[in-house]
Length: 91
Image 1 (cartoon, rainbow, N blue to C red):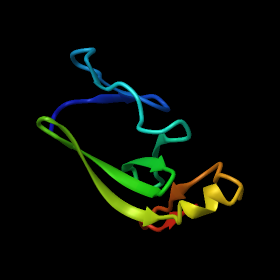
Image 2 (image 1 turned 90 degrees about the vertical axis):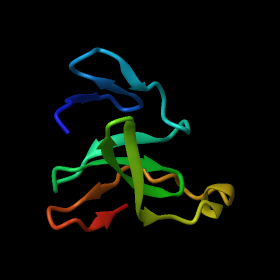
Image 3 (image 1 turned 180 degrees about the horizontal axis):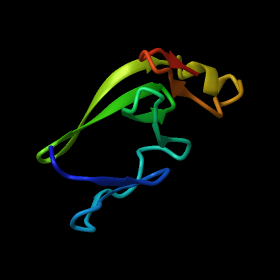
Image 4 (image 1 turned 135 degrees about the vertical axis):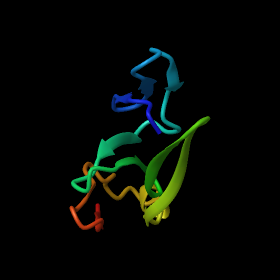
């Protein structure tokens, strides 16, 4: 795919057209990040999804999972997450 994108913490813009592809992440603590493997990911309360561009927008593929019940039990929300150069997810 030849399109370029601008990623902000909570939204994505097509750099060629200026059009907003995704105006806001689904939840208040969600964010996009670039892994050390060069791929784009979306962190959300239940895990990490890989963001794969398509002609119509993007496909999200689950790469890591969290138990969301921890949030209900007043455990701390994970403040950081990432993906290593060889594709291992850490949270």
